[in-house]
Length: 485
Image (cartoon, rainbow, N blue to C red; front, side, top):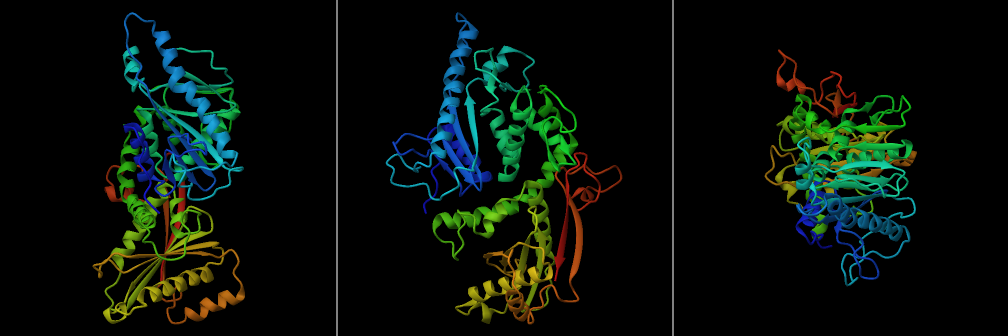
């Protein structure tokens, strides 16, 4: 497999870079083509049931003193928004028709994997460049120069500068030069991004209108509006009935000035260890150097499961994994440590196995196979110990404290069906290793919150890290258990 292309224009390259770096390296493809040789869209990304169809359009909105501003705006909106909305609807119809998709205009490279086009959730996203400066010039009250959007039952005939009406019956997401980087930076995992778009579509469908001064303001409202009963962020309210919701300008501007936001962003830095682990393995797949029989693209792999984790869970997982690395004991050349961490996905767990073996064993030609076999035993032992698990993801490494090389092994163990024969098999093989069966096994219960409150006066900053039991102002929280054995 060759590496994905990176777009044609400067803005397309920026979009491709955001998607590949942030959350969709193996599953994002710039400039795919239809079977007639024409471009389908500027970037197509597919992960699970979610399909993201991006259209990137650049057209400067000029300032011409002797021309009517309304006429200039109508022309810009027609070229950049209205035509692309029609193109986006056409792309959705093409995708659902199950016609062939290609990665090149010569139609020599087919789209590399299949997905369920009938049941896919297709997100149509237009990124409109060129109006920011004109919008800022139009009024000193414009904070960022973002486009105002209203979703309602509309035929598109109503038009005023820098405000766009979109038909709520077939919604398309409109980002612009300012808020596209914000949205893709703040929602830089597949689960976070798709959850936001899903909730936005839900709100659009249930309200008579949804109106906001900029996509970043809607994002700020969404992030600070957590429904504890539904256990997710919402737009508007599910407790009260409203005809519509209007988000005022400055919601995002005010949010990013808060200590809550700044502390959270600082705490999130450790979470990118998880991303680096994913990206390294994805690159190995692109380079054709990934061993094993996993099918990452089609979702039958440990990496595919790891990509599903939202940002705040990646923060918790990375923190605990790095703590386990630091805690690995100096117990001689033959030692191991296994750490169990639950996923955000229900009934899914990760096993981190650090295995230190003598140089004589490491030099054996089948050393890698033996290490994988031990990792498999650890995963099977976890399922035997915690019977509710339906998937166990194994991550095997040599302890970084005692190894100069960095090499990871990955195992995905589906275990919805777990017969007595399989259970006995891993019990027998675990007698030597005693994974999750030693007197040294310790269990910890921690709480991870999406937003990390700043430390209170008189309390050291370290107490604000993942693991504190203080409730988060937004109410979003998830408990974790960490086991060493």
